[in-house]
Amino acid sequence: MNFTARVFSAFAIAGVSVLGVSSTAQAAPMTVTTLTGFSFTSGAAFSHDGERVFIVQEDYVSGVSSVVVLDARTLARLGEPISSGVTGAGGTHAIAVSPDGAKAYVSLGSGIVKPFFPATLTFGPAITVGTSGVGEIAFTPDGTKAYVAVNNNGTGQYVKVIDVANDAVVSSVSACGGPLSLAITPDGLKVFVNCGDGTLSVIETTGNSVVTNFTPTGHLQGTTITMAPDGSRVYATSFAVPSTVTTVINTSTYLELHQFTNEPKDVSFTNDGSTAFIMSASSGDFVPTDPVSFAAGTPINVTSPEPGGWFLTDKNPRADQYVITGNSAGIVYVLGGLPALADTGASELIVAWSAAGAITFIGAGLSAVLLSRHWRLT
View 1 (cartoon, rainbow, N blue to C red):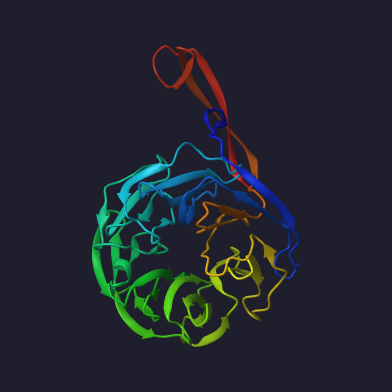
View 2: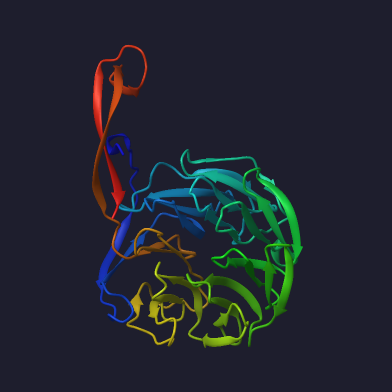
């Protein structure tokens, strides 16, 4: 990768601190970096190689949603926000990247999903899946299908299935009241849907039919859901009385295994599944938790307590790095050490020419040869 061609625009990075976490939950200390200068954010995703972060935000004034691209190593912005051209996204927009990293889907207002291409940082034509709000999106492990929670601002009941190759809706599953978030088992056979009516629906992907629908203890209005890396459990979060709860559910028997009650908002796992991190709004902490015993490690202080606040957590697939969005003050938190690059030792010759002081690749009038090294995330 030739880094000389990259241009970074300035934006604020403040409040960096290092906090120790118990060795049973996280082996290395974690940094907490506060990024400012955003409008309302509601979801993020990493590129397949872990080098970039795509954050979906909605402009306070225009109401138009956009994607902000960050370098995962430096946390600098790569250019200006990329507008989706869609207004009225509200708090339901989300982004998911396909398993091969070639395409992402962004859920927007007005019942629209738009393809987003990480390589070119451009949007494709809109895919209509509903009439108003759209929730989360989840790709099947083979990348051929994407499941979309169509909540229509709380009144929808359908999960739409998109054929990824053609960007077309190929199936519509009547799931529950107000589907909001989705999680697919690693074998691709089941989709767990967390719904606004407090229920969980389970869809089998072979025939796209609902195999069960149930209400976990105390769940009133479902919000986020996270699948454990081994597919054995899902962590489903819901509004409850007096706050929010996260219930751990066996994906085979649908039995409840545990319930977290310290106003949990979202859950993210280490890639090996050895630690579950729970973001708690009441404490402002990111809490490492043993996924078997459910014992908590030393909390990582992210922010001041924000009872009633919302946080969404996304994980870098190549590094122990987490991005937390959802703060209404335009703040994004990044936890964990910045991914490092290692020289692979490979190189390539790039023939170029110089015109008007600029370097342009491949063409007539050749006058320069550049050597570019290849790098990878360690």
